[in-house]
Structure formats: structure tokens, C-alpha cells
Image (cartoon, rainbow, N blue to C red; front, side, top):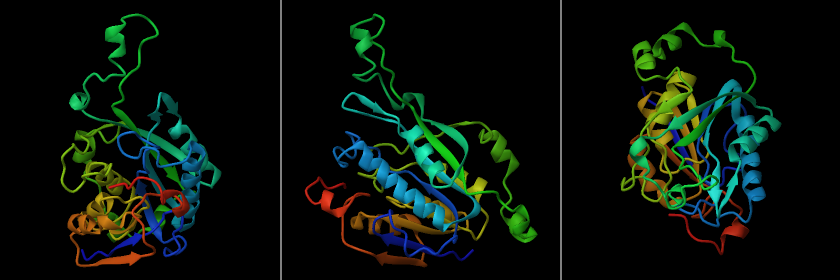
Amino acid sequence: MNTKHKIIFGNSMSMAEIPVESIHLIITSPPYFNAPFDYKDLFKNYEQYLGVLKKMAKEAYRVLQKGRIFALNIDDMLVNGEKYPITADAIKIFQSVGFRYRDKIVWKKPDGYLRISKRSGVLLQNPYPMYFYPDNLLESIIIFQKGKFNYRSISKEIREKSKIDKKEFQNNNWHKTIWEMTNVLPGSKLEKGVAAFPDELPYRLIKLFSYVGDTVLDPFVGSGTTMKVANHLGRNSIGIEIIRDLESVIRKKVNSDNLEVIERNQGKYRFVTLDYIENKKKVV
């Protein structure tokens, strides 16, 4: 199927290029709040981070069609010894702009992904109560919906083209609230320096929540994984990204002759106001 794809280089707090209710599915993973391993000190404070999420959520609600889904891959973050309840706060934010909280899926990474860290290893040095701090192998995929979906709005032809393989659904345990998926491993060339999720994550979500020919949006598209999988599955896609240097990576992953590039403004930084990022570290 001949699909169309668009990458907008700019800040996802504005989606001015995208018409009202023109998007059929949104999948994204925002930056981890000031994560020491990816975005250390990127945001001035937690309130600014939540403000960015809220502005993005408002725009997402505007561009998403009625009845359609927003899938948010996000999780709580430990920064300088303090745990931030990002998942709970994100749910409240999305509800406040009009979304309905529909479901939460837990993404479990392989058991061998983490060895005992300094944090969890404290108990080995001090095997007594109150020294326990667990290592995290989980992330959340929060499912939001904009109102109710009209199943009769989809033609029989499109329904059949988009039919889900029941064996794949059952054999890979898509029916459970825990999805076991291997994360993008360190050293991956196209995801170097970008906290990307694996192809399997948008693959499942696109199959389960969109139809062939639909348009899928990723407001924090990063290296273009969502767009790549959307193209593979016969969906159109739009990605928004503020790191201009990622265009070549996105082009390689999407691999489509129908890729339109819109450059809204210059910038190599993620999801924050330009007056703040001028003196902050580059995210590469």
C-alpha cells in the first residue's frame, strides 16, 4: 500500500501543522524526566516537565479523531534519590484535557537486562530491614481514549484488510496486561543516544488500535520507530521531533519515497522552551 509520511522538526507543544481530528492513533514516549543516563538536568524542575506534557496532551486531544486512542509509554523516574510519580501525574493530566483513562499495560523487559545495581545492592552490603531498593524492569503503556468509537464508521473492506491474526494475539500474550518485550539494547546504531522503544511496542499498538490507511502520530518521534512500523503496516504517519540531526536516521528507518520534511525552527534540544535550553547540554 502506498503510504505517506511527514516529519515536523519543531516542538510538540504545538501541532499547528496538523488539522483538527485528522489523526487516528497517537503513540509516543516522552523523555524521562531529568534521567541521569539520558536527559540529566534538561528540565528546570518537575513542574516544568509536567507543563510540557499538558501542552502536548491538549494539542493531541485537538488533532485526534473522536473515539480514537492515545498510547503513552512512560514511567516513574528516580532522580538524585527522589522518586517522581510521573505515571500517576500523567494520567491526571490527560484526564484534565478530556481523555478517558482506558487501560494500563505493563511492559516487562527481559530478566537479564539488569544485574544487581548499586541501588539494589545496598541490601547485600547491609542485609537488614529498611535497606531494600528494587531495580526496575518495568515501564507503563497507558491507554487513553477520546470519547467513544463508532465501529460502523469503518467499511467492511478496511475491517478485513486490518484483521488481527488471532494466533499471533494468543501466542504472544497480547491479551494480558503484561507485555514481555526486549528493549532496544545498548550499541544499536540507529538508536544511539536516543531512548527508543522496540519495534514490537508500536507494532502491537498499531495492529490493535488502527486500521489500514489510518494516520499514526508520534509527538516525540526520536529516531522514527513509530513511523517505521506504521509504514510497514500500511498506515500513514506523522512524527514531531526537535533534534534536527535525527533526520538521516529517520529517513533510514522509515525508508519511504513519500517522506515530507517540515522544518519549523532550528534546535537540537528536546521538548523545552528555547530560552531555557540555550545554556543546557545538547541531547544527542
